[in-house]
Length: 487
Ligand code: HEM
Image (tube, rainbow, N blue to C red; front, side):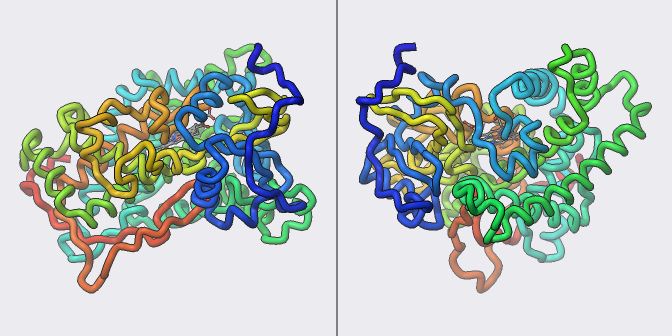
């Protein structure tokens, strides 16, 4: 209570010059995560600036992140409303972009119970095994015909099929992959054009003028998504009899919603919004981080070899990796943490919002402020990390940082955020990352195509941060043939 009392005598946090209308945007540049990291080195870990005409607090150190995501967590638990919550999330009826309130609490509770919590996750292990095995078979047949594997496309297909099967008992994409590629492009367009870069959200006067066509584009994507979701839901309803006695998540969500109190009623739009959330929040994030890990290892083959040796020591060459092997693979776990440190898929997290003013860290925080947590900057801070730009999994095996876990309590590494809005799919993201990456590394030798040159490590900025150039590589099977056939 004391903390929330806000004295107007307190100063605003330090920050750069704000131009009329555009605020600090011209100083930040097009890559918001790195532009803001540069400014915070000058102005400090709690920074105030205007993104367009919006108040923004940018947080760039573990102790500052702790203040906002732990001490003041309940105060900053909403989301700013903008085109993405309108177009994608059916006007904030989903979980990711919803204001903090009853609908959000209900979705969070039900999804933890039936879909994303540890017990629910254990129940879907066979689905993950089947989809990862199918991915490995696709890669093996590409390898046999000496064709390069475009990793992000395959990974997105795998993630989307896992989510499709556990949420609505449907494989969303077939092995041909054409639809998966279109879907990936749709999700990418959505995530790259939003976040902190949509001018209509930052400068309200531009919303109707829509100078970059973002608004129109978002609604076009909404329509395409809606067609896909309507088709999936219709098929789900038509096959209800097949699931008698073995309900999937959507059956349980509908049942819980129907049994809820009046104010907890789950509408069809909420269902669509939440299924869209799962596909958008759950497919690209996991795929991006695995692609970055593979890119880093292809640049440093000694790390790839050491990971292969570790897995081979536990699994051998006569069977595929299982999720249950992961606790015995500390080097693989360290590679995953190191990738999340250097390449967090959502570099500025997802913006939080506080409508009321408050006091934080000795500063006055104005009302209606966006909160941006620069996860990317914290992961690359030279005061925290030795040789921060070097990909070195070893740092998580011995030394001071070996204790750090990405679970929301060690603020040096918060790729999933922290506090009550922390990633609802953290466990699934972690498991899919460790299991898929471990399987790729164990099952194949990887090399670049002849004449490919250096791997381009450029980032493509947006709400998520994928590789600008999709990673394409040659895979040579390294396990006994029967291991793949045992799918
Ligand atoms: C490596 C993979 C992933 C990473 C790094 C990641 C990261 C994040 C981050 C940073 C947030 C925002 C936290 C905040 O606002 O403080 C978030 C939110 C969310 N994520 Fe993830 N995520 C991943 C995978 C997944 C998966 C697999 C799912 C589900 C299938 C998922 C579902 C969600 C949802 C529903 C939210 C919104 C939570 C809320 O607003 O209450 N994520 N994620």
